[in-house]
Every structure is written in C-alpha cells, then in structure tokens.
Picture 1 (spheres, rainbow, N blue to C red):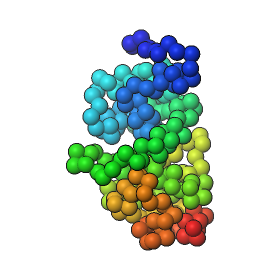
Picture 2 (tube, rainbow, N blue to C red):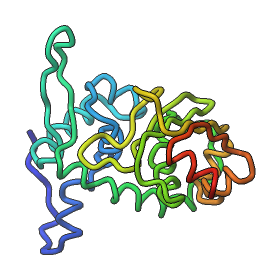
Picture 3 (spheres, one colour):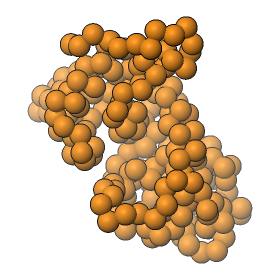
Picture 4 (cartoon, rainbow, N blue to C red):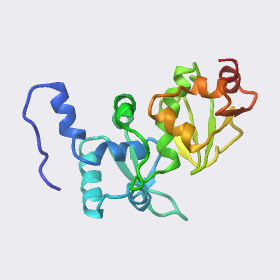
Length: 212
C-alpha cells in the first residue's frame, strides 16, 4: 500500500481532501451508496478506471475508514466492498457537488457513458425538495430501473433494478426529463405537474408528488 499523501495543512477541508480528493474516490462512494458491490461490479460501472487504480483507491479507502471488505457466505463466496458509517456520511457531500455541478452538465455528449442508477442522487434530491422524506420509490427510465429510499440513514440510499418489494410510488420518465432534472432546469414537482413524470401508487410518496 502506497504511503498516504497529504496537503499537510491544519484545515478540515484539506484533511477531507487527503481522504477523498484523489481521482475516482468519490465516484466509488457514489457506487457504494447503493450497497455492497463486488470489485468486478465496481469496475463495470466506473468506465474509464483502470484495474490498478481501482484496486489502489479501494485499499486507500479501507485504510482511511471509509469502506470495509467482507466475504459473502456460500454460494456467493465473493468479496464485496461496502461503506462504513463514516463513508455514508459523504452522501450530502456528493449531493452538494451534484447540485453545484448541475449547471455545467449541459447536454449529454456522444462519448458520455451513462447508467440508470447514476440518476439516483439527483432524483433523491428532487424527492426531498418535493417533501418526500420516507418510503420506497421505484424509478423507471429508458436506460433501466432503480429504486431509492429517501429516508435512508443506516442502509443503502438506492439500489439498481426494480424495487425489492412493493414500492410506495413508481415513477416513469424518459431520458430527456431525467437529464433536465439532473441539470437543475426542471424540478421533480414541476415534471409531475406537467405530465413528464408518471406517478403510480397509493403510498405517501405518491400522494405527496401528485398533490404537489
């Protein structure tokens, strides 16, 4: 394991960047906010990262107390990486970065990779702005489906694929609408109001969105 690099500054921002300022680290956190992931899954959903860099970042994150590694019981018998409590505390950091970066997102470029669950954090922000702070919400996009728990604290905040149980609300929207919300030019509440997002369900999240 390589020695830890440091800015050697007595400043909390500098100390934070000592731990998460390296390239790819916060994007690994983004992936692990969806729950435990195998190395191969992380590599597949982080297009552009080399195997050496990914392995190095995971070791650094484990050393810094952001992640842990454990072996799944049979028949899985594979190692998975997951966030510690301190690692999960980076959720508002990523949300703030996403909100700040929305203005520079622009239109999707032909070279831009995309995964359905990458829209989970912007959608989570939109749900909370609409007053949805609890429940299970399934989201269906052109690229696939994911689900989010707006009130999650000690569990993953989102998951890839359909909801594991009957959700409190199902949202269906096209890529253009989701990209507009990610850029901050359209709120979830307004998208529901104008019919760009279809809401199905009788749970509190569905009712709040329809009544908004």
